[in-house]
Amino acid sequence: MSWLWALIVGGLIGLVAGAITKRGGSMGLISNVIAGLVGSAIGEAVLGSWGPQLAGMAIIPSIIGAVVLVLIVSLILGIRPAS
Image: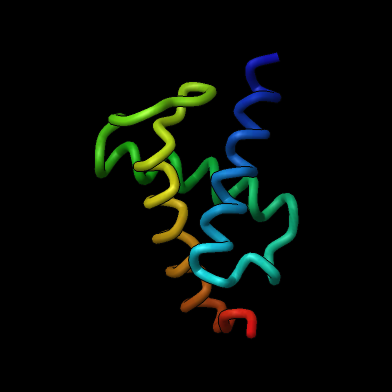
């Protein structure tokens, strides 16, 4: 059951990253979860696992990693911020 909690938290992290970058409107549910989980791994690998944690993910480094991931993928795919 912990994998379900990790997917939910990953989706929320991806949703926050999409809102910060204003590219969340073009991302679907699965993209939010993937951005959150991959961004969490990137953020914790680069910044460490400090701050509050949910489902084994450090929230602040995870959000930072997800924001960076969303921006890089948006640049590669040419996705513009929502108006």
